[in-house]
Length: 289
Image (cartoon, rainbow, N blue to C red; front, side):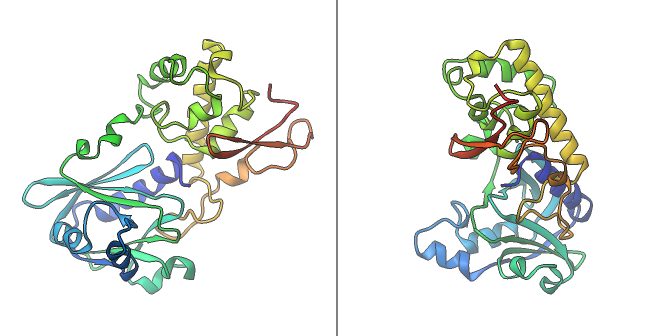
């Protein structure tokens, strides 16, 4: 699943090619339309395909921002509103002259939303597994879960928020790995970067949050921030399906010290796995205590 660095990379690339452009036309795939008739909510959430098209067509893109793992498209047409997108497990945006210009066949086959921009190019959304989301909102609060997200990890108040939340009744007895992956505690850090940060700090992923000192938790938070920034600089991580809008893979996967490793790069021990918070956690049984 794309985490904060991957989404940040997409947003930084969409901004210069999209802001100020008008959406001249909108396409929604038959696959999405059929999911609606079948009572499912593939990609388009709480909006019918034709209503989605009518709302976006003729609007101008005035901003593109990232909030945690979400992309916020600020749109203007008879007032301002939002198109909020989560990439899910395999969502990807491509800025192309035609759909045939999308570099890989697996992405071309699964294009579900296409925005035709006023410069003649297409902003195409592909989602192989269709776990991504698009919501048309008058304002952020129209989808209340968005208001529960933790501050951005780079914000001044993010550390204090993390410390307070990790000491709260809801989280203090949970494994620290599960706490880190909760978007109400830290925004944007999922399985990959939680794994890397815990290894960097030599903390066992199953250790309860309250069994880690406040000073150590503050150091862990800084490690998370450092790794997120490093990954942004490296273009994010490509494990399988992440691509930027030009179809390029990220480079952070080449710097992993623990995620996906069979052997610890520090001590040589065989790594172990645990299921924590519904995700497979890789760790070194020697280095991480």
